[in-house]
Image (tube, rainbow, N blue to C red; front, side, top):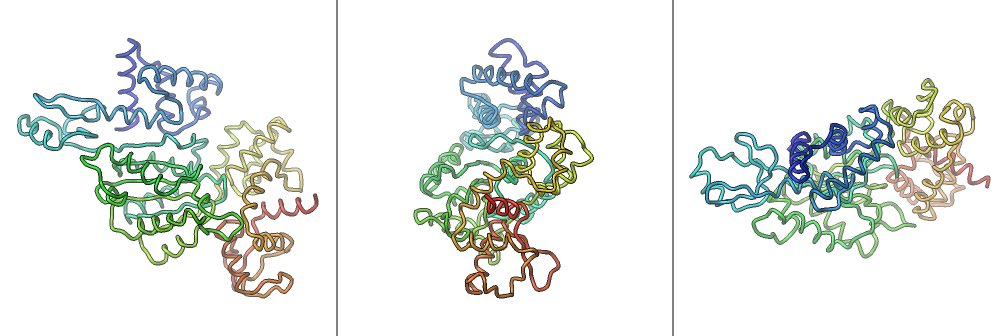
Length: 460
């Protein structure tokens, strides 16, 4: 079922219940939100103010909640409507099939539940009965609202290639907090959902025990199964499932090197390994601030394990400034460069420019000192997860004038060479240091924003 079909089906249900169709703005809001667009995008497309669209959106969710007798809001409307559209009973002669009730085209009926034998018998009696074609069951009820939909075309292309062509079983998407990993995943889902039978998103905050998570996933995957299967991996074999686990960094110990599992959550390691090494047709996506060491090892040993580091946006980051209505477009490129195209940081800086300078971005660029403002709190939260030795090395890196050669020994650090390498590896997996391209021997430097923050905090 595509967006237009789901919108049309929803409009039909509204008319059946209220005697009135959705108006043009309501349809636009619905179809845009179903594509994970935010209210600002909708306002820009329709020529309305943000506040007006937000107000009309609230009215629409209230209307749909009454029509479908379920609490509907922007974050869950797609999952609820798709599930509702997949649970209407249609009658064929003396038998009934529970099938998706979206626009039924010739030779296309989307079965979500029902007895296969009924379908077989019905087809024998009526040659005109459409051939089944599954529509995915999608649960994004716990996914956050997509705050932006900028760029990331190359990342989407890479991920789709891994999932469709390479049949990747385990994909880790990692990068600094606020880099847009979740937004990328939601955008990916909108483009690839027809390749799967089931799609479910779950954030690991609060952190569930593995058994509880498996029970939750099993309950969702068993909804349209003829009979329950014993293990998650059995569902992964019998159907094409896409499972997304977000905020995986919460599985790891704060105060230790990157990717060390909390004692009571070590069984997640075994689960990830099982997904990567077992034969099946599904895909598990992990999103994390840091890349775990066991994933690094799996990636080297197993062709079905992939990882993608998410870095800053390029020119597409200008859409953030357009949305915020910043002035002086000629210096936007410099803003993007200063803040590394990091969408979270650019949103924070944009808000600061609006608050302090009425949208005049040039006033911030005129400062030689890099302004961080509310970015500092974000960095502090991430740096608090470091081990004591990592903190020591990070502060040492912050006072270096140039990139350091990893092969050299630095006596003033008072750590062994092997321990130093281990620490640098951990910082690299946390995306806090960067490898300088084309250098021999290999050289690393601290992320410039982190360096600026630490330089400022040392003066406090």
